[in-house]
Length: 294
Picture 1: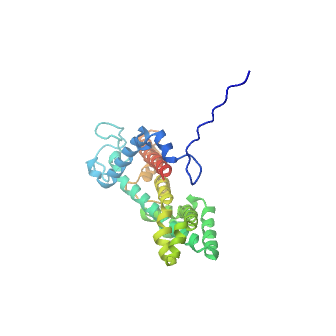
Picture 2: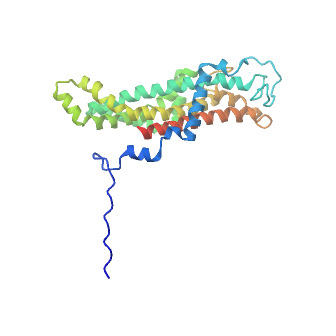
Picture 3: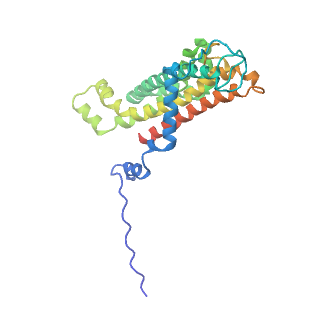
């Protein structure tokens, strides 16, 4: 008895350049990632954090610098996060601390993005000894632990939010440089770049009009991911006492000031720590969506 003929499988449509399945069709099958509940919650958390940094008076009328109540009060309707060791409202200090932390994170990302992209652009475009020298410098930066490198920079520059942000930004320069270099080298071998040179374009014109704009999409996606990491690193530096000086409200400094009261006043560390975790996780989740979409 003969077996029935096996019908051939229907071929899956593939990308003609890569041979893989069409990413647009994959995204359509999985749905819009920006409408998922986790993405919506992350957007709301980041939006609230940004509003806290821009318009802190919208969220609290308490003064974050003066203590006008009993010290170490627990969370209540009057003081949502309780009060600290000198009677200051902890919720207002978290709200006003968003400006210091988020502004520092933004400066850190911009430092890493600009400096790292320029290094990667020069290394990928010039090749030869320029590439070798710049990449050895990048390798040195990568060989130093991020916390140790940031502490070294702060010791050289001095304490403060701005110097801490620059230090954190320097720790991400190598990551941006390696990614930018790989993208520039990939784009530089494309047909449209050869056509631009054939049309009489100079190296500088081709570099800034064609190569650089077409190399930045993955770099911007990495910048979104580094934003959450920068918040965490700045909080760590503030906790160690290398960030904003007291009594400036800064998220890491708030937890540092509460170390002596962890056994009796849990809210001093748990509630600001929860805010930091929520913002960092939200930023990282959205950045991964941006990377996949890029």
